[in-house]
Amino acid sequence: MASIWVDADACPGVIKEILFRAAKRTGVAVTLVANQALQIPRIPSLRAVQVSSGFDVADAEIVKRVAAGDLVVTGDIPLAAEVIAKGGEALNPRGERYSPDTIRGILGMRDFMDTMRASGVVGGGPPPLTQANRNAFAAQLDTWLARSGPGQVPVRPVPKAGS
Image 1 (cartoon, one colour):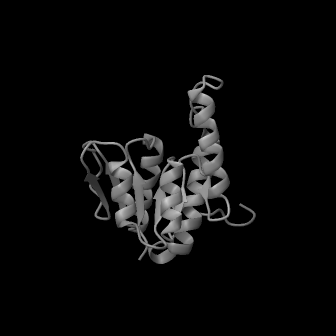
Image 2 (cartoon, rainbow, N blue to C red):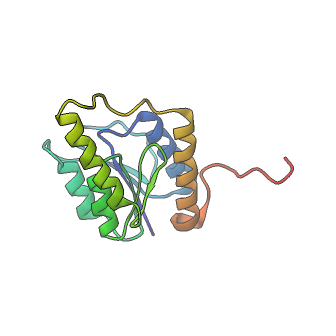
């Protein structure tokens, strides 16, 4: 059975809440990996793994544990690339699914933007998470659960035609 792994140090709280609801409703195994202690609700299929501090330690732990077909929730593009190389799937908190077809271009753009920020040409980070981002994330999660999760049950009920 496929599992969900969360790069939890930078994952927005609202996205964690969506994942907690998915774990409670479907029983899908959700593991949050972070280099700090996490408070999580008592849900049988939900757990947290604390790793030591250090650059990319949580990422390395996720890559070590992820299996083909698992979903990793991360905004870290190099981590997403490693997950895809292992046969896993990657979804960022804004609802963008990374794929073998797109990851190379996204990684190249990320490297380019890092160079631009380092040279002072571009400043700032990403804009705040919007309701549209949350909805896109939930929709992508539903799609993954329908395809890969336990019992293939969506996180949110799908409205019936005409209602």
